[in-house]
Length: 331
Length: 273
Ligand code: SF4
Ligand code: SF4
Ligand code: FES
Image 1 (spheres, helix red, strand yellow):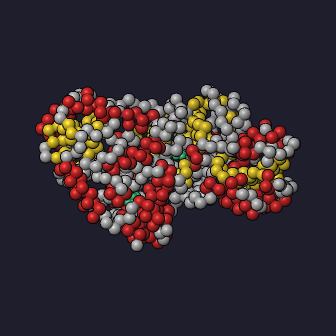
Image 2 (cartoon, each protein chain N blue to C red; image 1 turned 90 degrees about the vertical axis):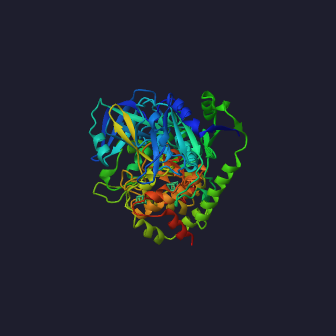
Image 3 (cartoon, helix red, strand yellow; image 1 turned 45 degrees about the vertical axis):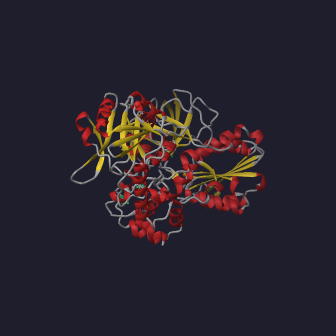
């Protein structure tokens, strides 16, 4: 591993250079709500990038799977760089890539969107109450699936290429001529470890993904009735989940099709023409999402389908806390 | 690996419409580009700008010039399909999924249990079995429908009854004066079937409730779970293992099925819904 060092004071020059070739997206803080989300960055807004957040409100997947996209009449898109991607979103790509880049049927839009995007993963030095990546053996810093990992300490940015795409971007912009080190500085290691410790402490009772699975499988129906009672089937939990991938195809003239995000929490999602609907009842549908995350998808793809980002907990208008449910089932 | 856009249908012209019953029509389509399928695989049939729906073609997979799709009126899109005019174009995507493993049927007696609209995909299987009948010992087709008027493909039944090695047994839930065959749910037909179970393969296709009791009956008759083939109906949409609508536990029915052995899926949730 090689870490190229850029002084924070020089970083905006690099971003400006990136802007001549790429669209640039990075988290920007909303000072009123204290939340942050990806925004398109221009030369004027470079200074508003917020590097120290944890999970941007919107998951990374929206760059690859926009809410609506014509998948037959495909528009070419501009190459882009996404800065500030947390590890929970990077880990989610293991599910999405398996589905959308499946050798038998490669999704042309997803592939184009994925190929055209350079991802800068980042360390999380802060965390939310709902963050629980470490419960599923993920770290709160980039481990895989990004092109460049980015860690900041003491006014210095450490950039580590993690893919050929990342390497060639850094080379092209001469960042690889900068001073570099082959181990990450102690200050970063200890900042990372602090977050790991705090997250483990915050979630010390939360079972890991295997034990979560076991307790969900043997949980009582009353548990699901109790929690689903507060669910209004709005689908926010799935819209915002970095691994949820479902969609609807909408037909347009000239045999074009628009792929539009769909959610298993909506009534009728699984209804067949003859009328049978395995997910007709709210409690079934509600439980299905948990089974999908902790049982079905891990079986299908040998990957985590809940990466612990906590977004579904933050987004639920019924104030349903996924982890509270899991803790209750684990008792 | 595909070269074309996986979401883009090829065009097919509607050349003939066969009225099977007031609710059921068979559309005969001639694809503009080369198109073939294996028995049991399904397609997505599109009405331009309106919508699409999944069907297993009901024609012979050996006929690559045209294909037949039997459509039961079940909602907005299928209603529109019933109103398509000869000469108009529709779209076809596919074929998708895993069909019947015909090689497994060779040198065996094949017992086919069908109900209602399940006859459509089964007819394609029957055509195919007839084409390879020198390699099959015997085919027994048990078919149940609600009433005699709901029995589709009547001319084909006559043809099948005259085909060596093929036997057809039918039942209806509710008979009328013209009915001379069995009355009752389709599984009653199995009571009189003489079959060499250890050297036999069973296929079940129809409404979920019939699939459930059919499967249980076959197990009672001594069929091993891996010799019972079920054709599962789920809410197929993309056909590509992506949209999630057809998920059944850890299977995407569109890609991993729709044909499964009972052994493969017996523990899946909501199997019979
Ligand atoms: S299930 Fe919830 S916590 Fe897990 S990855 Fe999805 S949104 Fe994040
Ligand atoms: S966000 Fe909450 S209320 Fe909305 S569908 Fe998900 S669990 Fe139900
Ligand atoms: S029909 Fe879309 S995943 Fe199976």
